[in-house]
Image 1 (cartoon, rainbow, N blue to C red):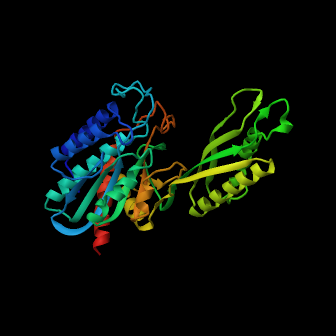
Image 2: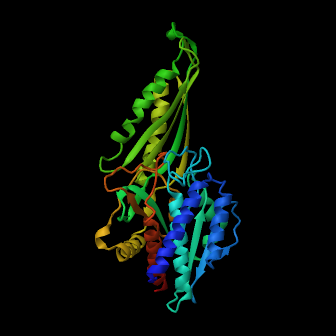
Image 3: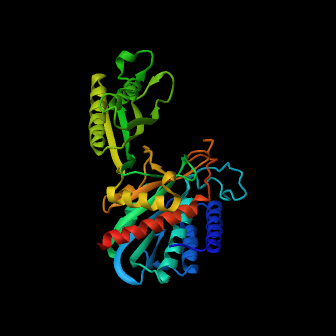
Length: 396
């Protein structure tokens, strides 16, 4: 659906102002009360139907065409991070220790733009058959929001057939869109290994079982899980982020604790790495006369794009920005709870390039992170064009 240049300019300014308002007032996961209120206000001021929700934060909106038909969904995340902002922007966070350092303010504004465009389309003579559900999801950063949305039943109630999502990407130059079918973001699993030995005096180690020594062997041994168990053509990483042990330099402690994360793009490697990590922990501890306890938690599955939905987004992006500005998306082992939707519906997650041409843009979760606001309306248009094509696809 085409819009007049004057309307487009006004919408772009409105989205920019909204994004900056959110940026100044960031709220952490499950605390997005005022964020939700601002979203609802924008929707109602735009004449868009806001659905009742049983979620404590976040909301849903529905744009109905003039004829019955399938329902497709568009999702954004809305939460911020516990980071002290250092951008120096005139609209920097006004809340100490909280910042939109992953661009969820960008995502929210672009999906609000998509909702506005969809409502204009629905009210026009060219109105569509079906409906578009807009999901303003809380708590992405803690991996809880998508599960809440699914549990709320809204996707089933509206008969949603597919769902689309985006993420800004500072590693992709602004003006480019990244799309691919298959894995795009890694699964996320967390582990905690407690090594139990026998404490004693550091000067007489033969009377003790040193858990720090066992932990040190585990830190290095865990790196072999990927290098010697996963195909070099696949992607996976095992990182130990914490190692805690001891109270004094001359005491061998009773235990040592390691915590870390496991990421991969292949579900089969997810199974393999969990199995091998546990085996390595138990056997290494036993070899030194110690014992190990492993707590392994699966957090998020691989974020994968359905082939048919990826083709729809590819065509939509090419329609909006041109064939030359759409590239194959580069995967990352960062996690994203959009993956939860993919377990229930055909889905597609795509990159919106926001990086500076010289490559100097700060990455996600950096205190100087920023986005290119001009790309928000671009994303809005791609979402609506993808929804249009998906409605046709599911009407056949």
